[in-house]
Image (cartoon, rainbow, N blue to C red):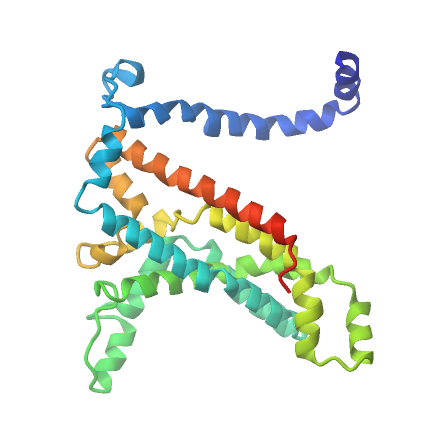
Length: 301
């Protein structure tokens, strides 16, 4: 065993050396901080440190779940996550299928460039664009409404519209970048399958349903499993920059609540407890999704 390990190290030493920085990153920034999970069960005091802070058991969890805003925060998180899963997840697949059907390479490259450019914009810049277009007073959309005698709409402060705005901007920002993976998968489908289908008289819809979608099935399932693992990660930076007291009722989520409680109020133990709860839910979901994917073995079409 030891001799085999030495031979492997001697033979693949360069590859192990290339792997080392990645391993160190995960150890230092992912595994070592897990020690501070203990803060979720303590009345954590920064001055006293983790080990000197008093142990309070499940009190932080009870404080959160018995709180007034627990139901609202969890409900907002689940609703926004569900909306993003239903609308944002299929969007790159649809775009990739549409681009795959385009025969003009110039037009295809132009659309690809226009759709994945928003991925490189920060949410601060995107919010600035939203203000320019949707602000109640100076926004372009409301100025057009005023020109045609329509009532101005406060898109950014209207509580009933904030979830739709979050999902819409998420699709616009991520659809082009997400489609790259599916386009790469589509490029790997054997063209002879389409030729054989045409000879058999299959329509474009039949080719899409029986060749194209099964060809990218495994990629879809893999990305779905990864998406489910982060189902409660609704995008802190996006929601934080769009959150204000007028829309907070429908937009405040676990991540923004944890930030306020942990960073602004200094209640580190309570914030850690809620973050741990969110992580456990994500862990259970990814295990369930992975088990379901193995059960069906990808045979969904």
